[in-house]
Structures are given as structure tokens and as C-alpha cells.
Length: 236
Length: 236
DNA sequence: TATATTGGTGAGTATAACTCACTAAAAATG
DNA sequence: CATTTTTAGTGAGTTATACTCACCAATATA
Image: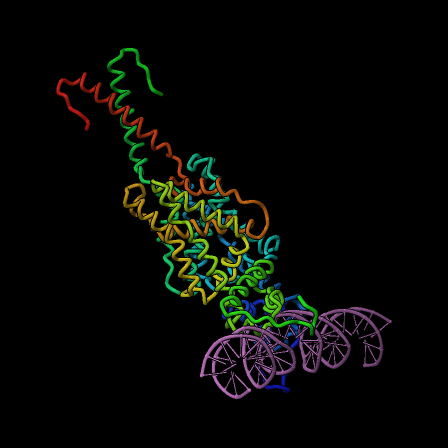
């Protein structure tokens, strides 16, 4: 900051100025929230006037959308690499849930902007941020699809609904944390969500045990049957 | 509306005026959304001036909260009565999911206000609307608890997380409908959500069949074993 | 009829997003 | 080097709207 009247005007190239504005905007939006953030404050932090920002961004809202677009680019980083290291639909599902929770844990303020200011507005649908969000959640849908194809998940499950229950559930559950109240147990939640989604809550649960028992019995029956009847009739 | 200058000033009692303002505010908020709704328009519809509204409500936001509080009172109406007619945790769960979806289907604009303008703001936590929302979602948590106590649902399931996955999932999934895009299949969704929550998506699903098959095999094994070894050794 | 109470008014303030005519620094051109 | 063109940046507006406040007038009460 410089004293009024004695300022030396600094001229930057377009790209540098845009990058600076995006960074300052991200800071101010995170600190104050969208409404309370004043464009004049973003300008003040860069020692420029409001008009300069409107030279590069049509509106305060476009600035917000651009800030979040940049964030999504950061997020995409290692999803594919991380997924490559994990086998089994259930484990891959858990990884994605865990990674998402970790992002929420790491960037609660940006999440708040995304959930509250961006995703809820009319202009979101069809925007670039919307496309990036679709790409982000598509990782999960793909993992679910693979699970179905591999026979690990039921084929009749509506994937889009499941996606919404996972992301919507996390958003609801993490809201207090996002608003600065309480903690967020990333590992525990990832485990519990995976469990609910995969196995449900209905009791009759020891299906795995039943399966094993059935297998054991089948083998015994086969052995017995072979001994009883001379004509060896395998159960295949 | 009357021509400027020729208006007859109408004086109403406090309660009637408050009720009128709430109704007009509900209409305007639903039509325009919170931001775009001007207090002056709410006033204009009642043929009064802005200042009158501020006589009864401290701020535009308090007006919004009051509108939604009234809506919740409407909603509570028949929940208990409806639940009384249904037995079995799974069926009761499905009923609550279905009723919630029906409310979304019937009042998408009020839902939009609730999700987007109210629940996301700082002043929501601890407000009267917050309390009413808790009371509303508590119906679901209670049904889940009953299910656990009756042995129908697993005891280790985190109820609050489940609640958030259901309401958060519905909110995410219904968002397009709420914003006026596409339809909302209330019956189908209620069925699918109940299914996912109760049975999960992991395959190994025919647990009931497995159970029956295991029983059948056990009986056969028993019979066979009795024939093979003279010492009757039941598998019990 | 005089007084108190309260419903209602409308002009005014404050704030913040956005506009625009203009300035001056740098880059391109001769 | 001098001139022209381009463009980064300015800052004084304009506009819109939530909210305030001193005042007015209709009704109830004494």
C-alpha cells in the first residue's frame, strides 16, 4: 500500500495482471464469502482501482467462477494416478470417497464457495465450472460402472442417484466443518460411507459367511454324493 | 394498485398486516429468488410503502426466515399420522423418503429458498428454522433407531451420516427439478433410495437365496451323514 | 373534546457493483 | 529518433436497493 497521491502506477502484462487478480480474489472470497467480499478490496490488495478489475472480468460473479475453475484444475492433478494403484471396485470407491473428503478437509473455504455460491445459482448449469465438476464426479461414476461390469456391484443400481447420495451426503455431513464448527474425520467417514453404500444397513448381513458356508456344504455334499453313487456326477 | 396521489390509506391490525406481508413475501421470494426480490415490490403488492414492512420485520432476511418457518409448520402436519399406519422399519423408512420427495415435488420454489438461501448462511445455525429442520429430519433418525432396536437394521450404522446421505442425496438429485429442469420420479426414487440404503450395492446379494440354499444343503448333509455314520451327529 | 397509541408514510442515507471518457506508458512503425 | 497505435490503468460518476427516521393521521381511551 502507498500513501494517497504518491503512488507509482505499475503496469503489468495482461496475463500477469489476470493471475494476480485471481489470486487476490481467491483470498478475499475465502476470507469474507462472496457477498461480503468487495471488488474494491480485491483491487486495494493489488494497489489498483476497481475499474482495472472490470477491464479483465465482466463482473464480480465471472471472477468467482474463474477462481473456482482454477481450483478444479488443481484438484484433477493426481486422481488418475491414485486410482491406478488400487484394485477392486470397493477399494477404488473408498479411495475416491476418501480423496473427496480430503479435499473438503484441506479447502473448506473454497468448498463453501463452490457449494453455496456457485452450484446453487442459475448460471451454473452449462458453465465451465459445471463441466469441470461433471468431469470430477465422473471418476466416481466410472468406478461404479467398472464395479458393475466386474460383477462386484449389482447391475440394477442407478449410478447417478448413487453419485448424488455420496457427494450430497458428504456435503451435508461436512457442512458444519466447512462453516468452521467441529472436525472432520476423513478416514472414519470414508470407511463408513463405503460400508453403507456397499452393504446397506439391513441386517441379514452375514451374506459372506453364508456364502462360505454354502461353499463348504456344497463340497461336502459333492464328496458324499460321489461316495454314495458310483456314477461320478460332479456338480461342476 | 391505485393511481399516485389518489390512494386511500388502509390501516390493518398488526396480525393481519404481518400475515399479509408474509404471504406477499413468500410469493415474491418464490418468483424472483431472495436476491432479486425487492422489498419495495413486496410492499407494492400490498399497496403499502417499504417502511411499513420494516415496522414489522427487522430486515429482509428475517422476513425470509419467517416465511420458511411458516412453511415448516405446514409440513409437520401429517407426518406422525402417516407413520402410524405403516409397520416395519424398511417400510417406514420408505414412507419418510417418499413424503420428503413429495414435498420437494410440490414446493420446489420453497425448497430452493431453503436449500440455497437459508441453510447455507451463517445465521441459520441456531435459528428457529434450524430447530424446525432438526425436528423434521428427526422423524427419519427415529425410524432408523427403531429399526436398529427391532433388529432389522445393523446396530453399528452411524445414523447422522445416513440421514445426511438421504437428505443430501435427495437434494442433489432433485436440484435440476427444483431449478425447473426435468421431472422428479417420486415413487421410483423412493424405492431406489430405500433399496440402496437397506441392501447396498455389493453383489453377493441373493443372501436370502443363499440362506435358503444353505438350509437345504444342511438338511441334505445331515440326512446323508446320518446314513453314512451310525452315530447320529446333528449339525445343529 | 383532548390525549395516547400505533399503523403508515416518504424522503433520505449508505454502500457497492458497474460504466466510461480519458490519461499515459509502452510498443510498433516510419 | 519521432510519430502513431495500442493498451494498462484511472477515478469520478451512475444506479440500485436495503434500511432509517422524523413525522403524520386514524383509532381507541379518558
